[in-house]
Image 1: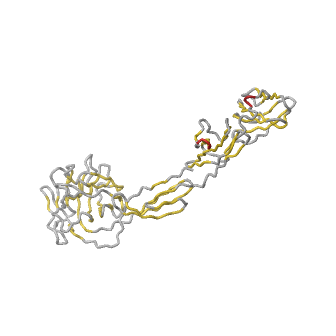
Image 2: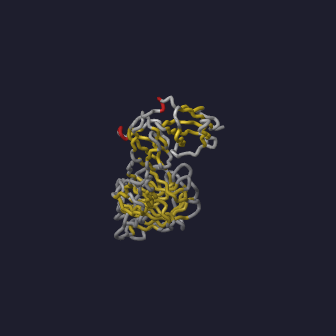
Image 3: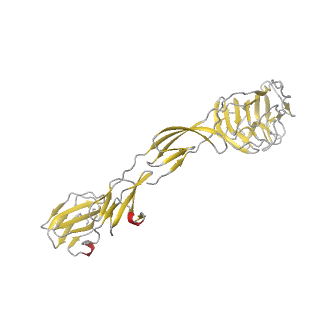
Length: 412
């Protein structure tokens, strides 16, 4: 049996044992650019930007942007950004940015939407990750970006559209909020309002469910645990980026193949397991594979111990070893006592000539199953007309010995 260990790939979430979220800044940005919390200076607008009753509205370009001061008590390892935004149209090849932190000098995280209408986020001065959320021009949306200990979550109108565990953010000490993404010279073509910055967000518990099927005798690794029995298992693990996550594994273990090799006759062995493929091996020669022996039936050419590896679906197993010790005893290849002709036969009729009295005549297919045929001892005729084309084995038993021949039927 080939034992295998399977591993599960998973994503991250963050458990929150305590909730101490604090609102650090609240800029309604309607006609008033004042921070409602009183902790920060006013939001500023560069020339060309106005703050009408529905928020800051821009038409794109390379120079205009709105800018917040550095947010007091902002922790770059644990924060939440929330804002409402509206796209006037779907951008062309440039990604347009509703909000970005460090946009004036080093844009280390922020929200953007892509030319295909997907909401996404930018981080570490140029990495873009697309989410599952679609943006329709002219509609207002509420987007929330949460980050804590390398775990990130993005919500669009209260629906989670992205979760992952990312590399550590490289903030370069720049903690202002801007509508300008200087990396791509893109500015929001639309409006945004109700910008809120908070600390210590609640990252929703992210569970990953995997359905796995393995072979009997194999095992699957989930975190630090290994499973080899059918069942549903729940584990917690830490991802390479340090995020804690929960994974549910629905595991099915295929039943063992239970392969048995058995002797059909003195020289021939068969497998009792129907499979997709067969490999016969020499047990007495280090389980070396016997080249060319890939059928369910195997005829030995020399004495030894033999077994078969059967593959069925994705699983394989090895049978017991059986002993063949009659090779060379009255070997049919060296005998002139039995002649079977024509071989191949085009109609399934064979004729037998032998020099001894026949006690019995047996006929087998390639699976080792005995076939019922008609034999006329007076004419020496074997009638196999009812059999399909293929290879067969004849075993002729006399008072003194046994003879074997491989026969081929080629019915039209």
